[in-house]
Image 1: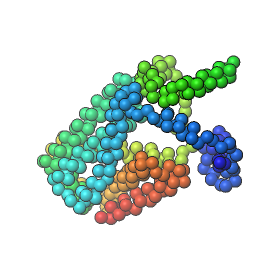
Image 2: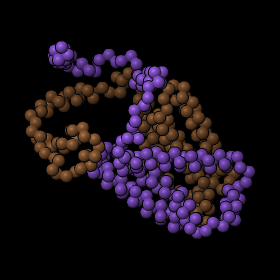
Image 3: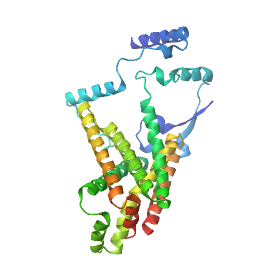
Image 4: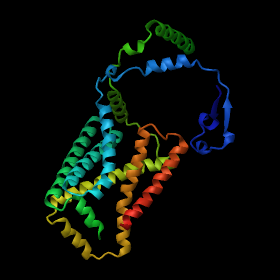
Length: 158
Length: 169
């Protein structure tokens, strides 16, 4: 099977050529027919390790990732839902979902940029404090003041 | 010399493969975790005071790159705004309608009000639509470069249009 190869993607000539998508840069590369069965078997072996054979032995990271995506979908749906069904239940749900989504999102930012054990610990502690205060403040607002949905409505009616 | 070693090792691995069949499953795991390795790497660099190679200052910026960091930026700004609002609710004495009336008395012109509404709603719509784009990627869809650019432009267009719509409400 011939493989089409973009010359620029093989040569290390920097990023700019990759943006050139003209046909003249593409030419077929004759390649020997690979032993498909053997390579797929090898792939199966390499990827066969299920999570419980992994060093750490826990799939908590995987669950966290799934939880993050599920929460994102929930928060997306709460936009229109809050518009059509404002009220106390929506206010508190919004407070919880919003705070958790922000907490997890900022957690990813910390994971990406913070280096060094003590710096990471301090950043995580600070984030936990921030999220706790945020949730407390939003609940306080929902209880003692007009509530999130009404506040947005009032602000927008300006 | 290295070539001899490499070919010998390759043959050695081959025979090992033949012997053990699904040998990878029972391979002995490394003693350290990825996290440990990473920390060792970073602390060694910090200890030796090694300079960091230029990266974002020299690499050619592309639309997907800009959109990605904007997604993170809008996320931080939005959560910062929510936290600031929550803190204000806890610390300030008055009620929300009270402060809203205070702002009313400032009598901003309609242009400033419209601009403020757009400035508030755009980060939200951008983050929401680009968030959907991210979820599509998480589902495994749309990774080809033309698709990435197309979905990116669609997100930008939808964000501006929705934000304008919300501003008009």
